Image (cartoon, rainbow, N blue to C red; front, side, top):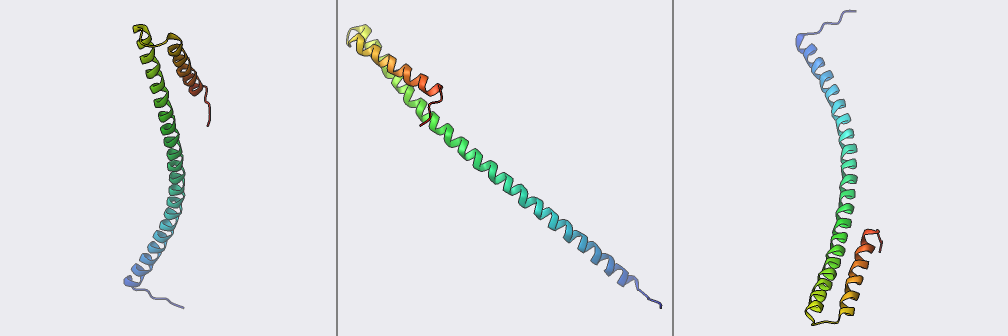
Amino acid sequence: MTITLSWEQVLLIALGIAGLILLIYLILFMKKLIETLTKVDSILDDGKIISQAAADKTKEIDGILSNVGGAVGIMADAVKGNQNVVKAATNVVNAVTSLIGTFKGKDK
């Protein structure tokens, strides 16, 4: 039994095999790409959670700093004789207490 192949047929067979190998590589590449995109999505979700937590703490600290600023202002007025010293000291203690509560990790 003799099989005769022309160069054209050999070239077409080689191109078909190369195309099949390329298709297999593309399928494997797409599989890894999907896995990578899944991991990237979870990382971005974690980043979103961290950003939200940082924003919440920033707002909380901003409120505390406002309280401290108000207490310092009241204390300055008390030194000038415009306010009651006890009220000023109470405001300072409240501001310091809220600042300590923030740094101890008080969760809401």
